[in-house]
Length: 115
Length: 116
Image (cartoon, rainbow over all chains, first blue to last red; front, side):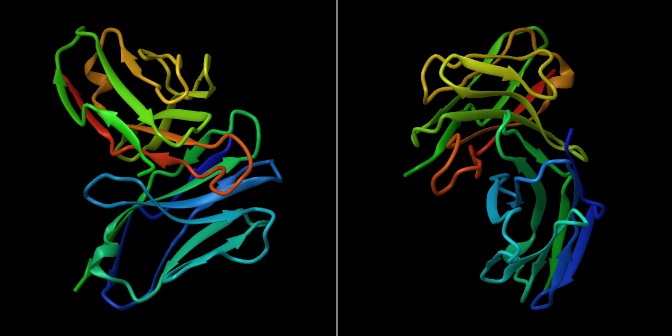
């Protein structure tokens, strides 16, 4: 079964600085998708960014970007110009193409933003 | 507004009292799934459904039942809740294949369940 590992249970960053959250995954599949979801105190799961494995170009959404290293099975999230509203739990997730198409989640990284 | 709606948002119950958490989506998605979230474990899949009348077990199905009689609804049933089912539950949906948004799960707001 595919597994997703987030090795940093907690991270902190100073407002306006940059922080990188790490994620590794294990799979034997070639077609899959990777995601970062944000969970603020409201508990809502919010999609931050998505990466298709067949795309070499790293995905970017405003201040959020990823470093996707397919061979290393690594998928880190970089948050630039951190804002107080970025404080949340962040989950890395993997979803393969086909099969039962279930999404696998890491244990999460709690990000604190210091003013 | 495209959304996944689950109810109740909060529930405190006692061991053995049957309960149902409802889930409904208005996006005509084929795929629906239930997850539970526990500290340090992330989200784990309980059951999923790829279409009407098609359901299957996820990683932690014990103590739960589901049904998919209509495309939009996917209720989670706890026949005899126990304290180890105290958790935060999420319903989610997505298109099954292809198109914009495929493979992106849209989540409900979560249901906090406490079993005493």
